[in-house]
Length: 180
Image 1 (spheres, one colour):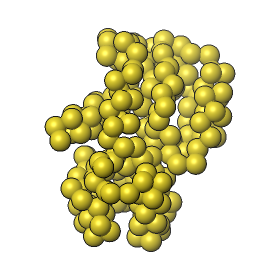
Image 2 (tube, rainbow, N blue to C red):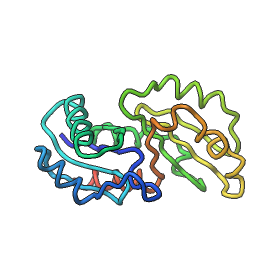
Image 3 (tube, helix red, strand yellow):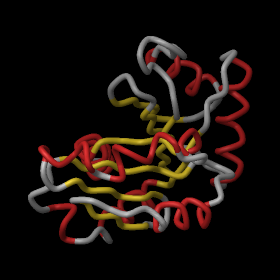
């Protein structure tokens, strides 16, 4: 089965450095197949013949042994990832200035995230709650600084427990999966 692991908080601003080529080697050495990465921000694709829970634990254990800083992981099967994107609302594919997906990492209280976001007064933006992520669109660049995404998200208690990918990265990973 093919998996997508999205790592949180690595290679941001020069901190928590994880070299992708080394990570690919480590994951392959741990017995995972067809290991690939996309850009330098913790996007990992690989195959494994194990349950999602087992795979997630093995990846987390590998990261904990290798790195001296915590790395949270969002793990999806390729099927779950592609299905999630298939179910997105029309605005995601429309004229949106900025699109981001906030993927839930393991152990995150998704109901809490939803409650906190639903309590926000949205500006020129839209939010869709998926099974594995919150999809957030900001419609006009000049209004970005007035959005809840800009003004509130960083202050939320759950912020360090989601791993964010731009819309273009989300789609590039989907294209990599679809080619397989």
